[in-house]
Image 1 (cartoon, helix red, strand yellow):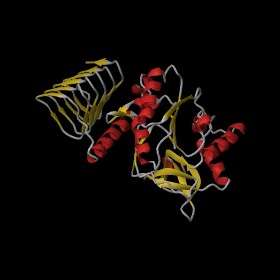
Image 2 (tube, one colour; image 1 turned 180 degrees about the horizontal axis):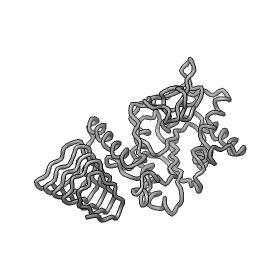
Image 3 (spheres, one colour; image 1 turned 60 degrees about the horizontal axis):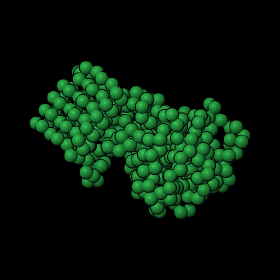
Length: 337
């Protein structure tokens, strides 16, 4: 089994945090998004992962440190690492085709901007599974249309009229991903684009037209990391799941007249002085917080936070902050007092 991870985007909606760190490598609940996504998928699959193929963007942004971190992730699963580049933002279908040498055999495609909780049951009779989540506002998503057998008959992007409430979350299984490769190659050859981009949906629709059977798989939780406010919310939800699963979330921290209201992720080397942290807070290693109250927030590594009362904040690495604003979003290497 292979996992294909398109992750070439710059994450512009998550700025300023993505100015220095690619979005999939931003830690949520103590682990980078892509690491948690790939590990969670690998745990749920019925067979070992043999290869993880990552589609990255510009090497100036996705550099050697990123490649090293992804290689370590794959190796932790006993899998081969393949690195590909998407030099231009030409859409989801084009991103998949950048990994063409790896597109054979059974595979999962997972776009690296989402986190899930699910039972990824694979229907042995299906050629593909598209994972979906029931939503209250389907007009804001791409959704699946089902036929009377429960199979997927169409994909509809942001429907004006009701089609279904099952939104596509960006994770797909293919019994033979080479069939998607062939379908997408025909899309590229015909220059079939939408807004100048090649979409994976066009390849999927061609497979459906050829008689391939697609079925939905529903996840119990779908957590987005699209912008700072949503990412902070996802951090809190993931902490709840991890705590319920019995995960160890608090490392070797130093507490001086301080308390932690769980669930929180507290990395090794964190120092808390006269501070209350939690619930739903993640703090990276070597961060020092004093005379503050922090809840529903994310603070990364090597920060100094003083005399602050944060709620719904997202703070990057190497930040020094002391202030009265609760809902702050501060990028790496910033100082605000």
